[in-house]
Structure formats: C-alpha cells, structure tokens
Amino acid sequence: MPRMRCAISWRSCPCCGVFSIWTAPLHGDPWAVHEEHRQHYAASTMKLAVVIAAYRLADAGKLDLDQSVKIRNEFVSATRTGTGIARFSMDRAEDSDPEPWRRMGCEVALRWLCYRTIVRSSNLATNLVLDHVGVDAVTETLIHLGATNSVVSRGIEDAPARAAGLDNLVTAADLGLTFQALAADRAASPPACREILSVLGAQQINDALPAGLPRTRVAHKSGWIEGCLTTRASSGPPTAHRSSLPCTTSDLEEQEGLDLVAAGAAAAWRGRKVLG
Image 1 (cartoon, rainbow, N blue to C red):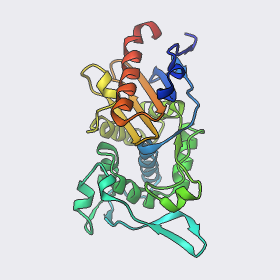
Image 2 (image 1 turned 90 degrees about the horizontal axis):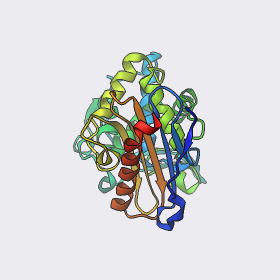
Image 3 (image 1 turned 120 degrees about the vertical axis):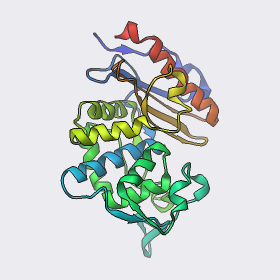
C-alpha cells in the first residue's frame, strides 16, 4: 500500500510547533508519515539507544550486564573546558526515579540500571549505564538500527557539553526503525531484543501515548523537557502489529503536550483499518 502523508494540519496551530508522526506495522514500510525526518531534541527517548548499546556489547562479550556498579553522582563531561576535563553532577529533583538515589554509594547490577533507565526513565541510571557503554558504542548502535538522523552525544544534565553545543537528537522515523529492529530481533541478539521489549512493556510512566490507546499492553519510551518539547515513542500491542511514533517540539505546557501526543496515538489507532 502506498505511503500516506498525515492530513492533520498540525502546522496551522502556532501553539503546536512542529509535530512529526511515523505510524507503521512492526514489519514493513510506514503507512502514514508527517515530518518524520525532522530532528527533535531527544529528551529521554535517547535512553533506549543507550540500553540497546549495552545489550549489544554484552552480546559481543565486551560487557557483563550482571557486573556490579557503584552508584555515584559525579560524571565526566563529554566536552572539555579550557582547564581540561569537565565534570558535572545531577539534580535529584529532576529525576523521575528515586530508587537509584536511595542506593547512593551502594553497588547494583548494570542490568538493574538498564531496567530503571527504561521503566522509570531514571536520569542517574542512564548516565551510569552510558559511562560503561560509551558514546561511540551508542553511535554504532544508531547506525546499526538505521537511525542515521539521530544523535547521542552526551549524558543527561551534562551542562558543559550542552553549553558547547552537544545535543541529543531523534526523529520519529528513527524511533520507528528502532522498534522495528527490536521486533525483528535485529537490534541485538534475539534473547536481548525480547528482554528489552519486555522491559519496555513494563514501563511505569504511561501518561502520554498509552493514554490515547485502548487498554492493552504497550511497549514504549517517552521523553519530555519543560517549555521546549514533548517526544514520545511506542510500539503498539503485538496483536495489532503496529508502531506509532509521534514527536512534537513546541512551547506547550507539560499536560498539553501529553494530551497532544495521546491524541496523535488515538488518531493512528482509529485509522489502523484504513491504513492497514
């Protein structure tokens, strides 16, 4: 079936900013797209690429997901200052997951940190995982996934790197390709892909895309940063064999952004019989 362009006039509403959508079966070409290659600030959606990179390194025997990692709140920046290595720490109040913070100074399994990175979108866990994975491995993972318009160049709250112009970027199309690769057991080894999808299905933050879908199991990863954008990614229920990826960059307040993404998911769900 030929690809359809989304007919919704997202650009006609100044408060909506730029809205991108990519909706497709989990295996096959997209059914409907709109600004699908437009880059958006990645927010927490970059965490999925970090986790996939960790599992790929484990597949290659270069990383042990069950190794112990000491939880700390000091990190080396992705950029240098004029005096050499730059360091940064994170704000506990900006993290949606209290569990890693409660274990500060303790050792936990790297696999557990990957889990918290997804199910509660832990910023602290993300940076600890990225420390063991490395930006280069994440870049290689994005290339492997075909997500060539996405960039992961730094950790969460890396202010020196952000000031130097290093950002994390995604597109709706790249997020869709990532979920397709997971569903097809191509993102990593088949057991790794199944485990990652299971963790995505255990997501505890469900106030965006899943809110627009009927009661069903949804594997997804979301991301949001106040005043700038809302990005959301989801693979739909296995029985529907679909993946719907809305992203929006706007000045919407958080709840308005959540409602917009949920509305996009609902529209994709309602149109599934027409599109499919």
